[in-house]
Amino acid sequence: MSTIRIDLKKKPQTPIIIQGFPGFGLIGTIATEFLIEHLKAEPIGEFMYDELPPTIAIHQGKLIKPMEVYHAKKENIIILHTILASKGVEWKIADLILDMRKKLKAKKLICLEGVMSPEGEGIFYYGDKQLENIAKPIKESIIMGVTAGIMTRTKDVTALFAESHSQLPDSKAAAKLIEVLDKHLGLDVDPKPLLQQAQEFEQKLKGILQQANKAGMEKERKDLSYLG
Image 1 (tube, rainbow, N blue to C red):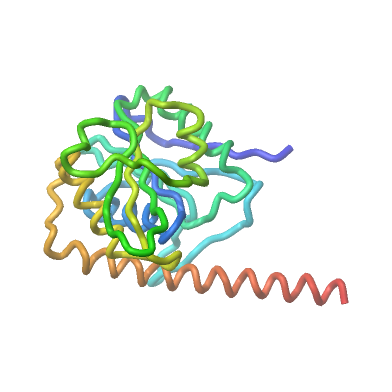
Image 2: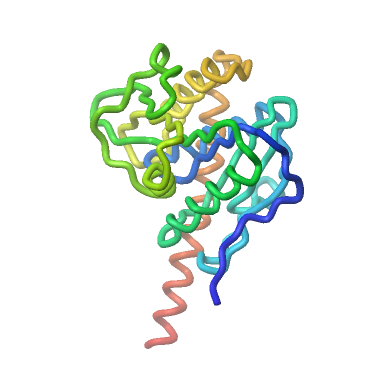
């Protein structure tokens, strides 16, 4: 029987939960990567699954698990960070996140996403009205993936959307998203090196994704050779 679950080594109570799953422009992934570094968050758990391809990344000699849970103790923020696409299990992951929020009595759940825009570079929000002075309310859009699953299941969620021109990793849009999140939560982010750091995370993700694509292509080649 296939399974997917979240295993936590620690269970901090009443946190803010921030999730950033791979989406348009990889905005959520870049932003959560930055937050983990900036807040010096420690890993407290991971997603365990057998419904997704077994994937692991090695970057600068360090093992990077594809779906991990981090905790910034000082700010009491839980960060869900993943480099693995959740295609086919979006509903299950959305339900797991909502269940975790309930068990930890989380104060707030914030989803970070990218949305396609041919010309704009704005930041939009859904949910928390306290964001209306620093972001625009989203009026028209199509949301997919884990964030869409969460928003379908509950209205008690906050989402921040960064406009992006491309499906390629977009560090500039992610940096703008972090600036708004900083104003909202008071994370003491220095805006000057922000874009440079976001670009570094973009390059890191590009390298990881290139290796993952190569691995996927090699697997397809081997599968075809078995059939031939």
